[in-house]
Length: 303
Image (cartoon, rainbow, N blue to C red; front, side, top):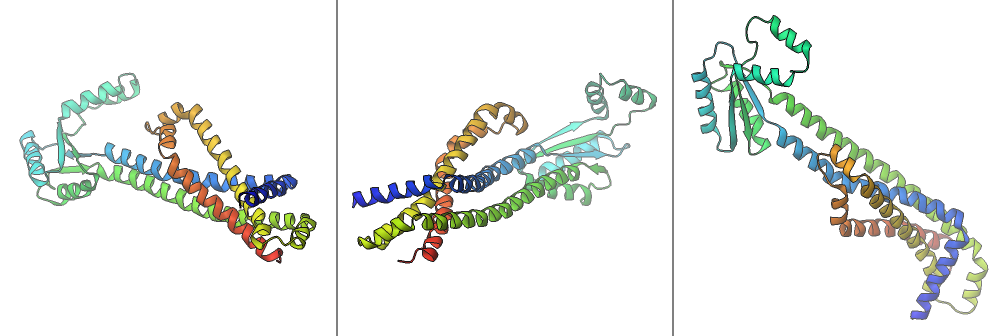
């Protein structure tokens, strides 16, 4: 049994190496398909991380009308504390404090400073900065402020701008995932067709050897096996190429990518999830290579 398996693998390697040009084309296209699958796998968790990061940075700034006294603002703060126990903290920023923050932020920008000097009175509004334990509560808090008992005191609530940013980020990541899935589907069809045609040509190239096998009484699975194994070889080589490229890219570019991705460590993520990712790649590649090879063998190899 072991000798037969060894011969099957040797014959598969011979058929793979005899058609190097076609084999490399199939490996290249399959590598692109596996690269896309791997990118979607990583992007899924990366997008969730970025959205979670954005949500953590979101808070509500409630700006009050100019004539509102501090005592009334403190009443609103007390009302918010009683409204939800999930509010993490509420910071009061007076008009004067808001002006100080603005001056500190734009101390090196004379244009802003000159514009502020031309305004006779303090143009800033008193505000409450609200941080909730869960981003899901912000819409409820905003509604309470704009439609509840304190709506006459409120000038505006800044949450809606932040909500739009998160919605756009979520929509962008969803669109990228959808586009990736369609592209993957296209590559899957292309890989199956190319592998199918490569195995077909291999069968024609080895027709004399196949005839000899039939004459000496070789079993059907012994004759078909090398062509199916050939499809698996395409997948294994493609996976090795893709994983090496990802590993080298993350190793050299990780520090720069972390800066752009809010400290998301791609190298650590890749290493921590490598086993699950590798099993997914193996399943994907074997299904592509195996199915297309099996279909070609079934159609062109009459036993």
